[in-house]
Length: 247
Image 1: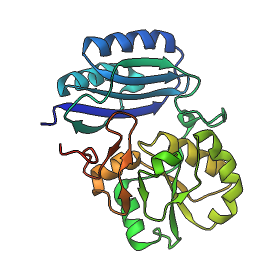
Image 2: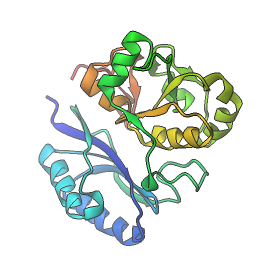
Image 3: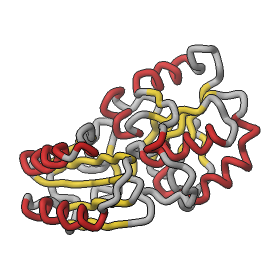
């Protein structure tokens, strides 16, 4: 029986009290018997948590009381066992490291495309203006190797900080295309899409909610393999079950 609720979510929002938040959120999570990781930085929050449904949703309800996090809407999946070993809350320079401090999603996002629109574009091979559509995987090589969109552009990144250089090397190839940048849950492709737009590529969109939201809403059409996740489940199938396990 799948009794463990797993959630992932993030938000780019200015935070000037990360040290105090670290102590508060760690205490709340431990009190609710949750395990996972919460990352905090001046640019926002990124979290992966697991526990009983009541405890996980109770944590999110408490988080919503803070106006900065009131609209956070986690993506959910289920597992038989707890996929995390401990509860960690860390303060970092960036919640997803890119080493480009001018890229500030909290000050304005790149345009996003929802899962159903992305599927429709992939079904027809072009966007609503007739422009060819390509998908761009912004994840690291070991994640891509677990599964990706059929025909996705894969620059064999070892880490996300390599992404800006890869864009500059391949920009000309993308100039006349509509590009859907994607990642696991949305956080990397949000920064990626902003960087690409600011680099002079006008038809770049981020996949809203990433692969996990796409799985939830479309069942994984056009996607080959599973989606790598950063816990002991390793990868999720299109139905959000653990790859290789009967849950």
